[in-house]
Amino acid sequence: MNFFEKLYAIAAIIFEIGLVVFFLLQPQYQRLSILLPACSVGLIVNIIFLFLVFRDIFQRTFDNSRTKYFWLVIILLFWPAGLVYLLRHGFKPRQPVGPASSAG
Image 1 (cartoon, helix red, strand yellow):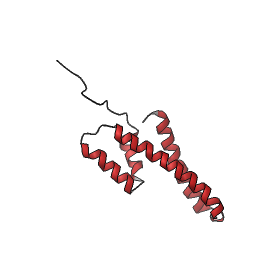
Image 2: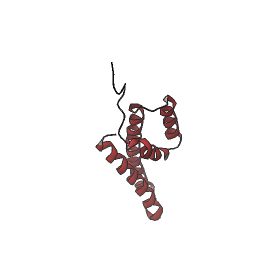
Image 3: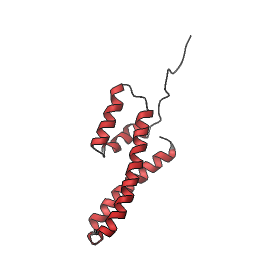
Image 4: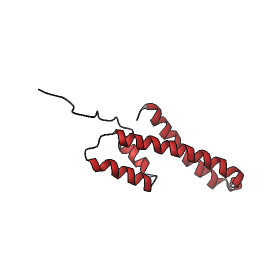
């Protein structure tokens, strides 16, 4: 992930946690006229976040070819696994694709 993608991922996580905490602590704002726009923004932020995570999964090389599909399925089924992925792989630099050196 490049700097912008990392920054967006962190901002998206903070936004989503903040949105949940806000509506839990402020029950007077739990009306449809407020919830619908706020959750729509949250949905758009989350879709972009998932796109960035999936893009990183497909561009990253893993030791085992099944690892890529493992992360894809886990994140699709259980969204918070995306946080674990970011900490384990997403915020680390990608390895170059192909052989590291071509000694003759």
